[in-house]
Amino acid sequence: MHPRRNRPPDFAVVAYDIADDRRRRHVAKLLESVGWRVQGSVFYCEWLPEQREALLPRIESALDLTQDTLRIYPLCLRDRRDIECDGRKLPSPPMENGFEIV
Image (cartoon, rainbow, N blue to C red; front, side, top):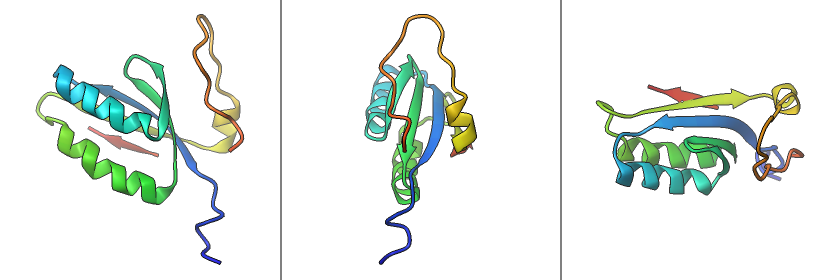
């Protein structure tokens, strides 16, 4: 049995500030493949290391690093359990089951 197959996914909060609408939509679509939008430019992502490694170059190639920023904040299991949400409730990711680019 391959050791990574039973590994639980990693979780992260991904936030971006992307100047161009077209680039912004493209990055959002990429993030929707591994996460849930929790704010306009913030995603809660669940991914395996190989998914993250495959997705990062695609996201980076969509950015204009002179105008855009993308930040990825890894969440450990304890931190995920402590997430709080006040105000208008958005669809929540399942809670059973990292990185910063500037």
